[in-house]
Length: 145
Image (cartoon, rainbow, N blue to C red; front, top):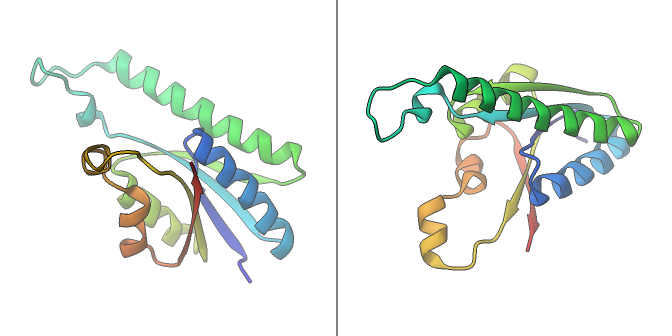
């Protein structure tokens, strides 16, 4: 049974459904819960101006991601669970797999919403699909329509 569950949480509808499933699995196996919100690295904030780095934008993004993380931890607390949450900075797949190794997670849960057109799927890419290839443990993808 899963003893350490990591939820990559972004506050989206798919993420909230994954959070509920995470709680149910944790209750069943009495698992430790970890939540992470992955914030893009500061270099991702560089705009069309070229090399302009915007510290205010980075701080707003950090606060936004921290609020998402706090919301997820509070939702789990209302369900009777204690979870540790952390905002990490970098590329989603790298940071999720690195954190999973750090806490010795045996299950990663991520939400996923199907995209309508092939162009949207191609443009956005699939974090959940790539995560399967790089994860050090099992991955549960919670799908919403």
